[in-house]
Length: 203
Image: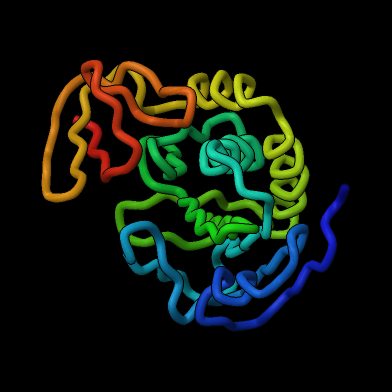
Protein backbone atom coordinates (compact mmCIF):
# COMPACT_ATOMS: atom_id res chain seq x y z
CA UNK A 1 0.00 0.00 0.00
CA UNK A 2 2.80 2.44 0.83
CA UNK A 3 2.09 4.84 3.60
CA UNK A 4 -0.32 7.72 3.42
CA UNK A 5 0.57 10.86 5.29
CA UNK A 6 4.09 11.11 6.70
CA UNK A 7 4.09 13.95 9.22
CA UNK A 8 7.56 15.28 10.09
CA UNK A 9 7.75 17.43 13.21
CA UNK A 10 10.54 19.21 15.09
CA UNK A 11 9.34 18.63 18.64
CA UNK A 12 6.34 16.86 20.14
CA UNK A 13 5.33 15.54 23.55
CA UNK A 14 5.32 12.08 21.94
CA UNK A 15 4.83 10.87 18.39
CA UNK A 16 2.24 8.50 19.89
CA UNK A 17 0.09 11.46 21.00
CA UNK A 18 0.05 12.97 17.50
CA UNK A 19 -0.46 9.67 15.69
CA UNK A 20 -3.45 8.70 17.81
CA UNK A 21 -5.75 11.08 15.91
CA UNK A 22 -4.53 10.10 12.43
CA UNK A 23 -5.92 7.46 10.05
CA UNK A 24 -4.45 4.00 9.48
CA UNK A 25 -1.49 4.25 7.13
CA UNK A 26 -0.18 7.48 8.67
CA UNK A 27 3.35 7.93 10.03
CA UNK A 28 4.63 10.53 12.50
CA UNK A 29 8.37 11.20 12.84
CA UNK A 30 9.94 13.80 15.12
CA UNK A 31 13.39 15.23 15.89
CA UNK A 32 12.65 15.43 19.59
CA UNK A 33 10.11 14.24 22.16
CA UNK A 34 9.57 16.24 25.33
CA UNK A 35 7.59 13.47 26.99
CA UNK A 36 8.58 10.29 25.18
CA UNK A 37 7.56 7.09 26.90
CA UNK A 38 8.14 3.40 26.81
CA UNK A 39 6.33 0.49 28.36
CA UNK A 40 5.08 0.69 31.94
CA UNK A 41 5.05 4.50 31.70
CA UNK A 42 8.84 4.67 31.65
CA UNK A 43 10.30 7.82 30.15
CA UNK A 44 12.18 7.73 26.86
CA UNK A 45 14.67 10.60 26.61
CA UNK A 46 17.00 11.44 23.73
CA UNK A 47 18.74 14.71 22.79
CA UNK A 48 17.18 16.42 19.74
CA UNK A 49 18.12 14.85 16.41
CA UNK A 50 19.99 11.86 17.89
CA UNK A 51 17.34 9.14 17.63
CA UNK A 52 14.77 7.77 15.23
CA UNK A 53 11.44 8.57 16.89
CA UNK A 54 8.49 7.38 14.83
CA UNK A 55 4.93 6.13 15.22
CA UNK A 56 3.00 4.12 12.64
CA UNK A 57 -0.80 3.96 12.62
CA UNK A 58 -1.66 0.36 11.79
CA UNK A 59 -4.45 -2.19 11.80
CA UNK A 60 -4.54 -3.97 15.18
CA UNK A 61 -3.38 -7.58 15.36
CA UNK A 62 -2.32 -9.86 18.23
CA UNK A 63 1.25 -10.21 16.94
CA UNK A 64 1.78 -6.56 16.01
CA UNK A 65 4.36 -5.93 18.73
CA UNK A 66 6.43 -8.92 17.62
CA UNK A 67 6.06 -8.04 13.94
CA UNK A 68 7.23 -4.49 14.68
CA UNK A 69 10.19 -5.88 16.61
CA UNK A 70 11.20 -8.08 13.69
CA UNK A 71 10.81 -5.14 11.29
CA UNK A 72 12.91 -2.85 13.46
CA UNK A 73 15.66 -5.44 13.91
CA UNK A 74 15.75 -6.10 10.17
CA UNK A 75 15.93 -2.36 9.48
CA UNK A 76 18.82 -1.88 11.92
CA UNK A 77 21.02 -4.68 10.64
CA UNK A 78 22.14 -8.27 11.24
CA UNK A 79 23.76 -7.68 14.64
CA UNK A 80 20.52 -6.51 16.30
CA UNK A 81 18.59 -8.96 18.47
CA UNK A 82 15.20 -8.92 20.20
CA UNK A 83 14.51 -9.08 23.91
CA UNK A 84 10.97 -10.05 24.87
CA UNK A 85 8.61 -8.30 24.78
CA UNK A 86 9.79 -5.17 23.00
CA UNK A 87 13.48 -4.24 23.25
CA UNK A 88 16.10 -4.02 20.51
CA UNK A 89 19.58 -5.11 21.64
CA UNK A 90 23.00 -4.48 20.11
CA UNK A 91 25.93 -6.28 21.75
CA UNK A 92 23.61 -7.11 24.64
CA UNK A 93 22.78 -3.45 25.34
CA UNK A 94 19.49 -1.69 24.70
CA UNK A 95 19.40 0.01 21.31
CA UNK A 96 15.73 0.85 21.15
CA UNK A 97 12.22 -0.10 22.06
CA UNK A 98 8.70 -0.53 20.76
CA UNK A 99 5.43 0.60 22.30
CA UNK A 100 2.09 -0.51 20.84
CA UNK A 101 -1.04 1.26 22.08
CA UNK A 102 -4.35 0.03 20.73
CA UNK A 103 -7.84 1.42 20.35
CA UNK A 104 -10.77 -0.66 19.08
CA UNK A 105 -10.10 0.40 15.48
CA UNK A 106 -6.36 1.05 15.19
CA UNK A 107 -2.97 0.45 16.74
CA UNK A 108 -0.33 3.12 17.30
CA UNK A 109 3.11 1.52 17.02
CA UNK A 110 5.89 3.72 18.38
CA UNK A 111 9.53 2.85 17.70
CA UNK A 112 12.55 4.60 19.20
CA UNK A 113 16.11 3.77 18.11
CA UNK A 114 19.31 5.38 19.43
CA UNK A 115 21.35 6.60 16.46
CA UNK A 116 24.08 9.12 17.30
CA UNK A 117 23.66 9.22 21.07
CA UNK A 118 22.60 6.80 23.79
CA UNK A 119 22.05 6.86 27.56
CA UNK A 120 24.83 5.44 29.70
CA UNK A 121 24.96 1.66 29.33
CA UNK A 122 22.82 1.66 26.18
CA UNK A 123 23.82 1.11 22.53
CA UNK A 124 23.66 3.36 19.50
CA UNK A 125 23.46 2.46 15.83
CA UNK A 126 25.58 5.26 14.28
CA UNK A 127 23.68 5.25 11.01
CA UNK A 128 21.88 8.11 9.20
CA UNK A 129 18.31 8.56 10.39
CA UNK A 130 16.78 8.83 6.92
CA UNK A 131 18.41 5.55 5.88
CA UNK A 132 17.12 3.68 8.91
CA UNK A 133 13.66 5.24 8.55
CA UNK A 134 13.40 4.24 4.88
CA UNK A 135 14.34 0.66 5.71
CA UNK A 136 11.99 0.62 8.69
CA UNK A 137 9.02 1.77 6.59
CA UNK A 138 9.62 -1.05 4.13
CA UNK A 139 10.10 -3.67 6.85
CA UNK A 140 7.00 -2.56 8.79
CA UNK A 141 4.93 -2.92 5.65
CA UNK A 142 6.43 -6.35 4.99
CA UNK A 143 6.14 -7.84 8.48
CA UNK A 144 2.73 -6.44 9.44
CA UNK A 145 1.38 -8.23 6.36
CA UNK A 146 3.30 -11.47 6.92
CA UNK A 147 1.52 -14.65 8.12
CA UNK A 148 1.61 -15.16 11.88
CA UNK A 149 3.81 -18.25 11.62
CA UNK A 150 6.38 -16.34 9.57
CA UNK A 151 6.48 -13.57 12.20
CA UNK A 152 6.89 -16.08 15.03
CA UNK A 153 9.58 -18.01 13.18
CA UNK A 154 11.63 -14.90 12.41
CA UNK A 155 11.17 -13.52 15.94
CA UNK A 156 12.52 -16.77 17.37
CA UNK A 157 15.54 -16.57 15.06
CA UNK A 158 16.30 -13.00 16.18
CA UNK A 159 15.61 -13.56 19.88
CA UNK A 160 18.19 -12.87 22.58
CA UNK A 161 15.73 -14.14 25.22
CA UNK A 162 14.90 -17.70 24.20
CA UNK A 163 17.13 -20.42 25.55
CA UNK A 164 18.39 -18.48 28.54
CA UNK A 165 17.36 -18.06 32.17
CA UNK A 166 15.20 -15.03 32.82
CA UNK A 167 13.36 -13.26 35.58
CA UNK A 168 9.84 -12.07 34.76
CA UNK A 169 8.17 -9.42 36.92
CA UNK A 170 4.49 -8.85 36.39
CA UNK A 171 1.77 -7.52 38.69
CA UNK A 172 3.98 -7.59 41.78
CA UNK A 173 4.93 -11.23 41.15
CA UNK A 174 8.36 -12.51 40.13
CA UNK A 175 9.15 -15.78 38.38
CA UNK A 176 12.49 -17.20 37.27
CA UNK A 177 13.18 -19.98 34.81
CA UNK A 178 14.21 -20.94 31.31
CA UNK A 179 12.69 -18.92 28.46
CA UNK A 180 11.66 -21.86 26.29
CA UNK A 181 9.59 -20.42 23.46
CA UNK A 182 6.93 -17.94 22.46
CA UNK A 183 3.30 -18.93 22.14
CA UNK A 184 0.95 -18.39 19.16
CA UNK A 185 -0.03 -14.91 20.37
CA UNK A 186 3.48 -13.88 21.36
CA UNK A 187 3.37 -15.06 24.96
CA UNK A 188 6.71 -15.90 26.59
CA UNK A 189 6.90 -19.49 27.79
CA UNK A 190 9.02 -19.79 30.95
CA UNK A 191 9.31 -23.28 32.42
CA UNK A 192 6.00 -24.17 30.78
CA UNK A 193 4.15 -21.09 32.08
CA UNK A 194 2.83 -18.48 29.64
CA UNK A 195 3.35 -14.77 30.27
CA UNK A 196 1.44 -12.28 28.14
CA UNK A 197 3.21 -9.25 29.64
CA UNK A 198 5.90 -8.38 32.11
CA UNK A 199 9.35 -6.94 32.60
CA UNK A 200 12.10 -9.43 31.71
CA UNK A 201 15.66 -9.55 33.03
CA UNK A 202 18.20 -11.80 31.35
CA UNK A 203 20.08 -13.76 34.05
